[in-house]
Image (cartoon, rainbow, N blue to C red; front, side):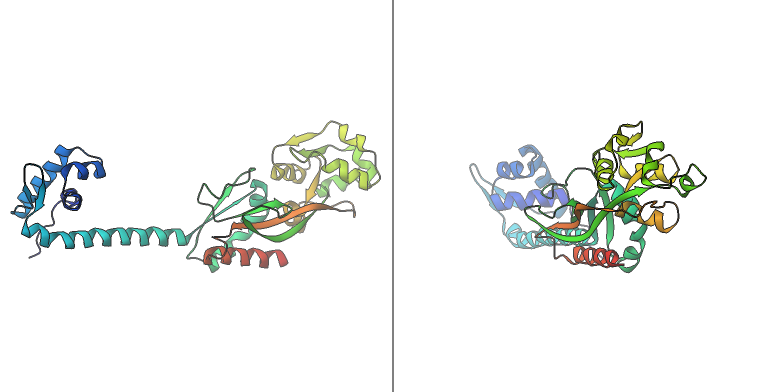
Length: 296
């Protein structure tokens, strides 16, 4: 018959008090009162049916039975700590947290993510989105897909793709005698804008040799790029498309690029990770998958 185990609180109180040979110091370590330690020790002694401490006027000593008992209790607590650390470490090894821009997640990453999950079913992928650069020193983020020039101190950055920008619209806007036929016709259509990308139309119009005052015509502005793209899909107006955000809609016929001229951007998409995480198997697997997807 297996003996019933004593209370865990009593064993913790015993181990701490035996290590310090002081109920006061044990209480401070465990953040309880000295009275609570005394009560837990007394209850443990009652459960075991033997004395563990010799209480002297100004000192505390272990009984011979407690001296024999203590190494096993210490080993058991160490085993608990080791098992807990292993559990949490394994959990972190399985969880992969990636940060990226909301529009990139919606228009490019999420539609392609299923094959990665199928191939790496042992990895629990979590996608977080933000318009701000993630602080890797805070939150448990393993990697990020960022837009920029690849210069982020303290991070390993690997180039993924260059973006091109060009007008896009619903195929419906090209139909009929009043349809969008040439760049000059843009003056008759609603131009769609995205907050933070105010220069896109001006840059493209300048490159096309068109007056930029077209931009001053009444239009619509959205907070996020994927909303602007959706407005274009719905035929509300003409947007400046960015390759990563519109290539799938173009491939499926929901959008068209009415003009041949494209304008290369001076930045691109990068996969970044802290140097201490860059070579973790889960991060390497995701990075390799990203690079393979970009080459398709």
